Image (cartoon, rainbow, N blue to C red; front, side, top):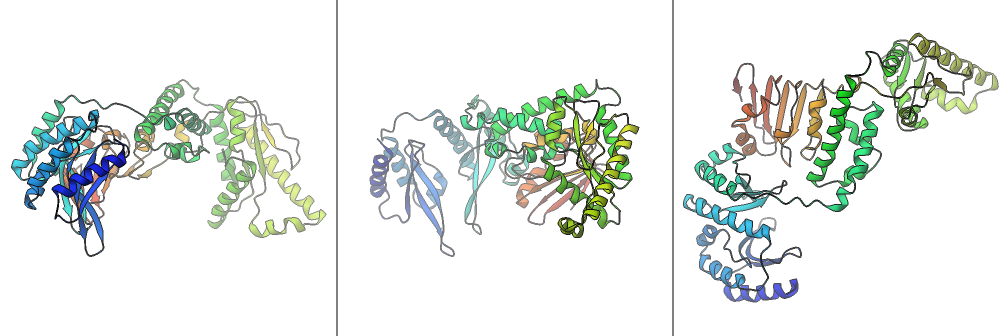
Amino acid sequence: MNEEELRARVRAISDEVMAGVANVNVATYPTSRSAFVGIDLIDERVGLVITRFLASTRGEVRFPLWARQRGLFERATELARRLGALDTGPNPADDVLELEALALGQELLEPAGQDAATEWLDDGHLAVGIETFDEEDWSFRFEVLATTRGDVPMPGRARRLGLESQAEALAKRLGALGFVPEVVLPEDEVALVPGVVEGVIRVFEYGHHPLDRVFDYTGSSDWDDVVDVRVQRRVMEQFLAFIRARAEEEKTWPEVIDSDRLEAAFQELRREGFVAEMSASTTMSGGWEVSRGVADERRAKGEKIRGTVFFHEQDTDSALEGHPLHLAYGLVNDVEDDDREGELSEEEDAKVSAQAEEVGRVIVETLRKHGFEPEWSGHAHSRIVLMPALTWRRRRVHVDTTETLRLGARQFAMSLLVEFLPRLRSLTLEMDGGMKLEDVRSDSVTELTLEYTREDDARDRLDGLVALVKPRFPSLQMLIVRSEEDFSETVDLHAGGAEE
């Protein structure tokens, strides 16, 4: 039967079995052959509605203790029997597993006075736990106890709920089911993976942005269109393989490479009052905007800016192929001078050109001091060609200078890059929404902050947290666990104690 027919049949059975019961709800889903019957709970203060399901066409009674408390258990049982007798075809494998896991949960939790609940996890496994009701938010909150991985992911939570032994027994029995999630990835997102990986590697090779920012500069929205966490992980794993291979390759590089000499030349020019930027934006006009921004910042600190030299990412693209690197240079005027540029007399224009040419001569002389033989016509409107031609590559130690980093709850894929940030000292992770501490490691981080929305979550995670982070963060000195509800606990790993 189609969805409309199924809904009509379920509604008829529901009207008969639940006659006289207020706020009965029938729900069907286009992606499933199942239908559910439940009770709408209404917050009269603001009109919020949530549904507590009682039975489905799969034949199970859900939340039997809750139903008993409201005198609805016999009706829920009859509803489950009649709905289960409808010919909706065989249950999908996921439904079979969920029903089996739910039955185990009910067997172990009902004697403790709790209804079992289930929830599918991002990694394809199934979690079994209980639901607690938050009257203020008018919502049910799933509290995980055990999963089909065979683990108790939050022992502190099980202990707080007084269900520690039940959680351990449940984990053992769920693990014994031997469930292995089927990996079915969205084809449209998988098709984007090669392009995303190629784009982020290109930004990496520019040698301008630290690893925690490279995905912001791919020049494509494809990464934003990859929302499935498993596909994001596939992208990141391929990128990490490239990073590791490049790290090994760097070990074979000469002690001083071309970009080191260019880095030294640019640094000398900065000391002499020049703006000197590598891979400055993607175009010539963007490079001038970057130069202006840097110049304005330095002028605000009292520095006198003599000029600028830069190359942009299109120049870098050419150098990556082994072609000569072209440098742009000139004066970096203040806003007032820029406004007058179109009004300059011929004499004034010649003076500006002469000043720009002097900037070019200083740059060329500096490049020669550092082992280059630049080609330049000597005219203000011609670019400097860095010779001999070089294949562009840059040591990551000059690029990955991030010392403080905060990653949002949905940036868990980026957390895999943390271990490759050698100067990172302070790391903050928003843990709600998919972030996994097991994915994060760093030899340099000395202060780690874990943020949760609810105080209960923060407290529940504390149990065993030090043992979890120590092998992943060998230099860690301070661990801070806090919530938005003003809870905060700091563990000084040197002292071995905690203070609230």
